Image (cartoon, rainbow, N blue to C red; front, side, top):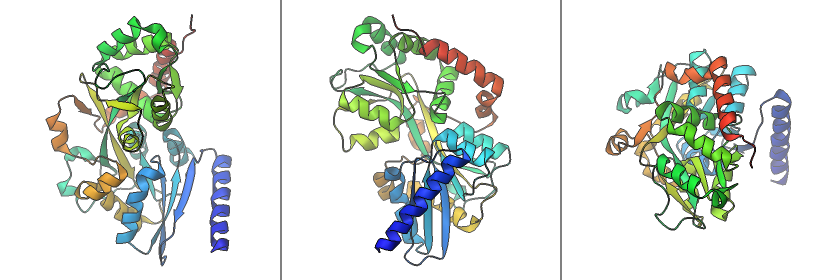
Length: 348
């Protein structure tokens, strides 16, 4: 047993070194061995282990012969692994809908029709290559140290007014994504800018108050919970809800003017070798809404058209060529320059 454990750690270490050498960064890797292995499903994903492990265990319970080799990376690194380096994976799972759309659009995804496709909303599948299995809002999280229960601003205009009126209170204590590093952060920022002009006013106010820039939702949530930050903007709601179940010190705010809702997606890379198991996992993931036990265990809200209809503030990001607009090099460069000019400012 000790030998097997050592071998697994050695394989993981070598793999992480190889990933670094090849260019894309591996944040974590875990091999979930089947009791009696008949095949290995290789997944590259942006979902943390704590979120995705319950799904892997349930999948293996239904498919006891399949081992799962699960590699975690960031959204931009996942894109780099598949698009630039032709890395060998059977599934790619990401919260960056625009980057996943580009992979499918540019020929890096296999076509497949899930067995339960007829029961899915039309907008949950794109070109039979990209499949949504969750719908996750971008939220604001606020620290209990700075906001009593229910006292946080409920709209972007109210947030801007609060920050302008209390600059010293919030200086250096606002967090948001560094959109130059985070594919999910870039997606949320571009969608915000398309939805409302308040985005740029908010970025300028945050910039004047020395906003702290992050790569990941988890770090922002932890700093808000500890009181290091007063608030964090555009945090992944599923991660915030999962953390709130076990951690005190913060509140989740879904702004009432609008809430962008990201669809977490899965695709089968064109160079996948274990296509049968990949298709089985796609079927499993797209049926997540039928498994309330897994929804509770993972904290991932499943695709649910009714929930979107019941709350008019929820604005699901739709698949389609529109997602590729801000991936154009010229448009991306222009957007990033505008963003940097707004939020990366010299403090007085």
